[in-house]
Image (cartoon, rainbow, N blue to C red; front, side, top):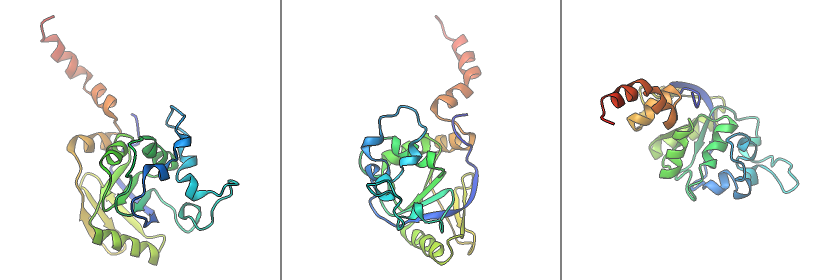
Length: 198
């Protein structure tokens, strides 16, 4: 299994109501030298989280103990900019398993699913309701139900559906990346190969 299986996630959320968050802000280019997927979470939003002397910026949400959880709620057009998959690696390595926004950059969305993060696209109106609920109670919880493809504000019961490719949904619920998916079909592939002439 490449990643944690994703079925139903209930968690509080970290709000980041900033539009057009790009991949260089998510993980600055100077931290892209590593080839393994580990350790990137330390530098997630590095320039927003830390001062030049490496002291934490108290006013940045990831440094605020008021907020916690496995869900990151971002503003519109989250993950724009370059196609670096390290941005998704950093979000996953930090501990987030779901990112909610009213719009995602296509490549970021694909990269996220490929590393086990579920990007949930909601309407602008529902996104505002989520931000308002978190502002009123930072411990408010969301339920993200991948099998049912719904996201729910548990405090109010308000819910919205979201779309996802069936193949990607299958992989997320099984904790597969593309290679794991092929390996899961090893017997079928072998049986098919036996029927082919050499």
